[in-house]
Length: 79
Image 1 (cartoon, rainbow, N blue to C red):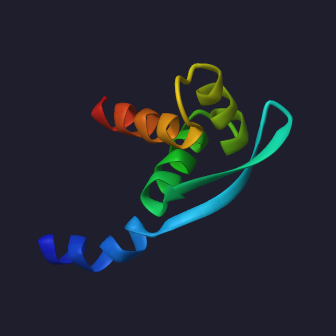
Image 2 (cartoon, rainbow, N blue to C red):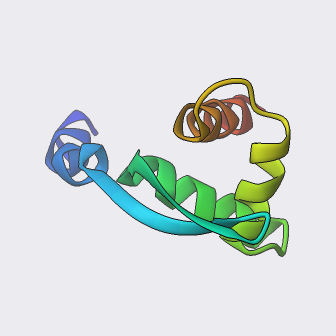
Image 3 (cartoon, helix red, strand yellow):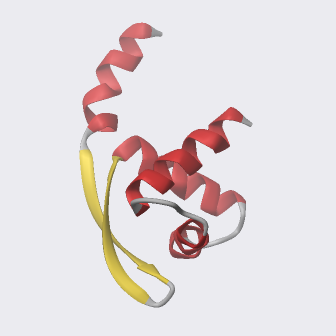
């Protein structure tokens, strides 16, 4: 198992900047791939687009959008 983690770590930890639409405004967010992957999974489970989910996260944030998304993903994983 540890070997699998070590082999996928470079791809998961790579930082990727993507454009999202938050409340009708286009912005870019830079997150590691592992966070983008989980964000897409949560959006699909909730039958929402990633943009809709990011807009909801944006409404409740204190601080940067990237940090708020990371905290959201970590909270979701704890459930």
